[in-house]
Length: 219
Image (cartoon, rainbow, N blue to C red; front, side, top):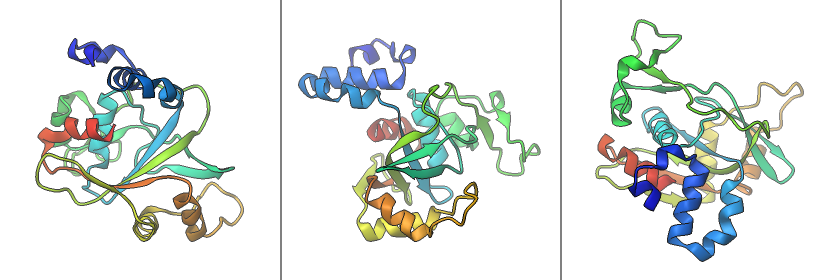
């Protein structure tokens, strides 16, 4: 957008930037989508270790997104929607990820459980913005499943088939420890989740130089 070309985007929050981008590129369609873009919602990123979850999260935060939880996120069904609850919000990053988003390694705090740097020199990226005052949980808009990184500089993605979605969610889901009564089977919850929330399988490029372009493509 003109705002981005002038370098003013850092002064705007992420929903405002998305609205301006849509107004410039698709003014008629944007008039119908501004309300939806401005609504508070959450994107859940899951994947195996090393697939780029924290790195992508940090790049999206750099673009103005707000992190609500790192490592473990509680989700629950409310009516016909699924909601994600806030948790520990510091993002743990390795040195190459810190460099890729333009930060200094020594400017970030060490992990609270690894002050000796035995875990590869990870540092904690504190959230730059506070969570919205309400609601306490955000409606889950989509799930991104990160798979093995690919050579090149382009993001690869496709909508998960039902068997793919079941396989990925079973791999990463666990029962809710906060529910006092015996929780429903994970399989039943996964079935309901697949029917309510779009699930996208994403492979990020293996080059850190493509990080910001990847975040823009995801956005």
